[in-house]
Figure 1: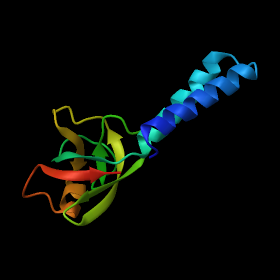
Figure 2 (figure 1 turned 60 degrees about the horizontal axis):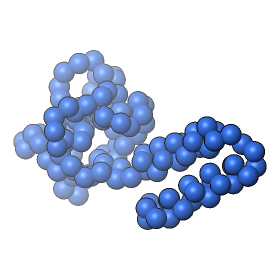
Figure 3 (figure 1 turned 135 degrees about the horizontal axis):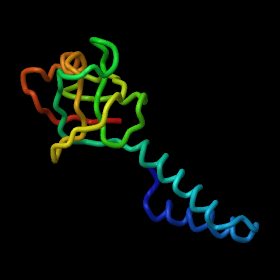
Length: 124
């Protein structure tokens, strides 16, 4: 991701160009929001992960996860201890401070985190 100063400079150019072209500012703001949403979605997160075995999210045995902000149905790559898996976002959560993702039991087994319960992962 580009440095913060470059992002701010690019946003200022977009706003200035839109105003000179006669495009109303609300449209410029919409473009800016989309830009930030894409930049936010592409970043990697590092934090704690746990797993859950409740609910009927996704197909039985499917590798799914719960994330606070990622779009439903999007695929995320979760890495722990040299292992990486891809799982589909099917729920919102976790709602415990410090945790960034909840994994299904199948995803937790694939990562090898069942014994630990809560581990530090990277989410992309």
